[in-house]
Length: 168
Image (cartoon, rainbow, N blue to C red; front, side):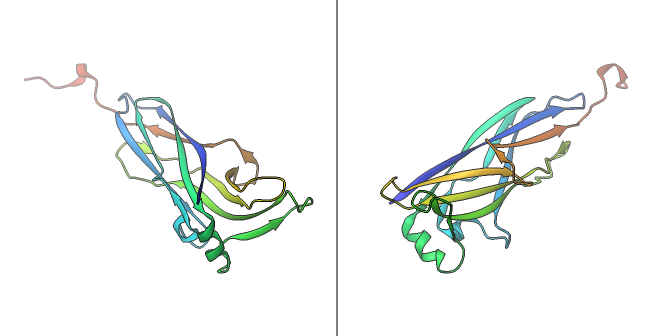
């Protein structure tokens, strides 16, 4: 059985030149400290993209699933770690940690965000107190919890004003 999780990602587009940004799709990646993707952990996740059109704030929900059988299979490889908190009957889970960052697509006129976030996927097995479930926890790179990931890109393209064009 696959269990679903999600987290939110926001892209702010700012304009510093005199040309309004057009449609653009920005892509993001999740990798662990050894460059492995969520698939190595038995996690299926949608492509992480945000499509924008103009200046403003654009949101997306990143969705994924975890298959418990895959978690157990790869946990023996040391990929999923086991955590037991102070209340071991309700605060015990498998987890894996990734860094979320934006890919620099190199589009002309764009300055890409260099923000990064920690995304921890937690799998809670079924206990007497709760059903099995999965959650995604986000934090900034200092470890401070976040409600979502926020990235800002700037569009600085300029064009000559109409009055400065040379006419025949």
